[in-house]
Length: 363
Ligand code: NAD
Image (cartoon, rainbow, N blue to C red; front, side, top):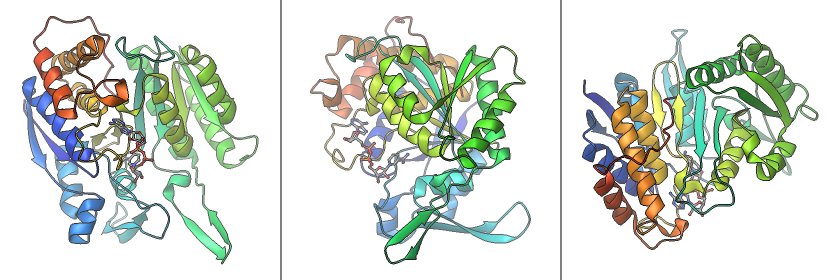
């Protein structure tokens, strides 16, 4: 059955890498019909609205979106707001620090799943890394609720709920059971943030205890960062509150070759939005140098989520093969190919005999 997918190019390198993903998905013959929509900071500049109502409607109607990264302002008081009828029947306005966080919040995409995997063709300090980061996607400091208490003092709200933490832990456990993963490490800072991170740690530990076959351990997040660099092979899955999940995702991407090869998925009860871990990289925008692999791998995750496993496997194998030869890769991987050339090389490999690449299961 053909799936209709909301496609949002986003900002910066977003249009280039989403075009690459679309080209590869079309070339593999996946059963996809694209619905093109526009959201992000460039749309805000052109129209005054970052995320129009049609975008929320399209994603909810289709159930699945592929999204390029979107920009944010650094500092200042810019917010993305949305007034809508809520589950309680009342019209309420919600406000977010940026367009990506608005989509996650409004669509209740509570789980962020980020598989981090070594590729044989990428020169990096480590080999054989294969871990999954589960980042709680709807709470924590990421709510962006801040205020000035006087002219020289600012504070922010770090909100953690038991229900949100339990929901995330259940999601992680069910994913692990489906995909044969056995150990999860909860990252926290409950030695200092005794109430908030303490609640996250307790709620997740209690929830995970009811899943047989899953070993649960925990680490203070700063020590976890060190250990990830020293012996990343120890880790199977990480379960993290929103902000630590954001930071450790980039750290973990660095273990396998950088942000250019780290895919991700935002999953909720009603819909899923697939996007790369990286941002819109303004330094690379419009130069045809961005690595398209993260977005292409995010599209492969999306295909697997849609049950189109064979198409996903072929895409991952083609990318693996291009990375192995190393002849046509972008500058971040040591090559000199442009985004479009690397994409064309991946498309050219789609029909090559399989490389036996071990694919990532659906979120
Ligand atoms: P970034 O991820 O955009 O860039 C960090 C570094 O990684 C830069 O040096 C960049 O050149 C490099 N990089 C990123 N993607 C790459 C790719 N595909 N190929 C090669 N190199 C790549 O992070 P940033 O600079 O901190 O943020 C830029 C903007 O993106 C900010 O406005 C931020 O808020 C936003 N952002 C959006 C998302 C999202 O939409 N999901 C995620 C992270 C950051």
